[in-house]
Length: 258
Image (cartoon, rainbow, N blue to C red; front, side, top):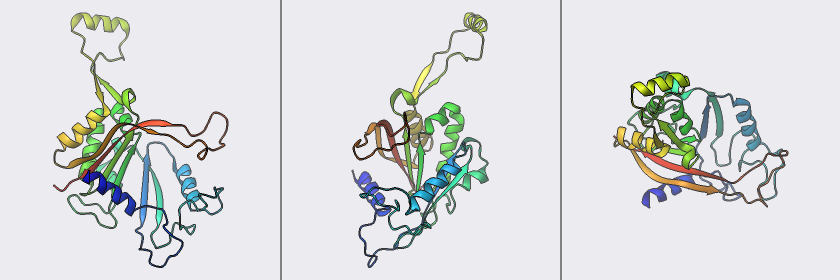
């Protein structure tokens, strides 16, 4: 589709791959700043990964020589200009103040157009289902706050576990009561019917119904496989650990003008 073609062209525009060894005629590259957010402290891991992709000293294959970030000079600077920086913030996104939430998206102003400093891509990687499981009300509010914080044209990428792994159950009796109390309650009032909702349904309802007119769905796939090439993609990281094939669901939305 035209929308999917636009996404593919946009991804090509920000590709980190070098297309040649000669800097002559190379278009100036934009700065790329990544802000990683999690409730746990991954700062040391993020710092090590960032240092590794810029380093020419890490072990590498002949087909993918170091530094792993093509054209890097070891300090985040790439050939053709532009820096690639990664920052980590430890935060509970469901309980941030308005000021803390806005600070995650520097340079953004609601209703404006993308500027060189604005956020162009937000990813929720195997996170949204957990947020909905923690609190459906807070997760919905988070998506609506996200909507109000992003400019038109910004892409939202949601990747999560597929199928029953991302189904949320609502209703039914609370599990905090003892069995005797539950039996007594059941005798006094009908048991509430438990309902199951796929995460995709809750996501679409929030972005396309509650925030109607503010998002368009660009691409959606309920089940997709990532399969590694075992002969080319293998790492000796210890017994019982390594890369595995995986299945996931994928949804892409674009923020619209209001």
